[in-house]
Image (cartoon, rainbow, N blue to C red):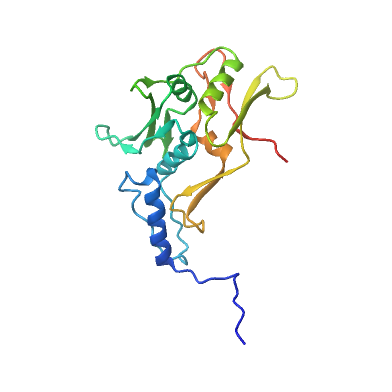
Length: 235
C-alpha cells in the first residue's frame, strides 16, 4: 500500500529559494541598478534575526508599484548623489511622465523629499516630462475641487485608483477633506524581509499611495487641503 502524500507540508530548500529570489529580483527594474540591492540575505530560516531592505529601497519600490503602474510614467532607479555630502546622505529618483499636464499633476501630489533615519538619509523625487522639463510642486488652486482635478489627472491611469471624493472631515465641520479612493487590493514586492515567507513587503494599495503622496496639498498657502488616501467602500 502506498503511503498517501501529505500536501500540507513540504520540506523547504533554502538554497533553491535563494536562486529563485535572484531571478525574481532581476525581473524587477528597481533592483537591477543598485549594487546594494543585489545582495540577498542568506541567513538560515531558523535564525531569529529578521532581515529587511533599507527603508529608502522600500520607498523606491513603493513608487514603482504605485504611481509607476501608470503606463505613461517611468520611475527611474534609486541613485546615490555623488556630489552631495555624507550628512545627509542623498538619493535621487527621476520620474518621467509622457504628458506635460500629467507631469505637473504628479509633481503636485508626490512627496518631493522623503526623510529617513531622522533626516540622515533623504530620497529626493524629481518629476520630468517627456521633453525634459522639470516640474516642481505647485498649489493647484484655492478650492478643494481644483485639488480633486489634479489628483484625478495624476492617478487616473494607475492600476489601483478608483475616484476622488470630497466631504466635510466630520459632520457639521466646515473643513473639507479629500479622499482619493483605491481598490481594496494588496501591493506586494520583494523586500528581503525574512519575517515574510516570500520575503515580500505587503500592504494595501491605499497605504502604499499614502506613503508616497503629500499628506497636505497647498501646505504653504492660506488654504491647505489634507489628503486621505482610502480603500474603496466595497463590503
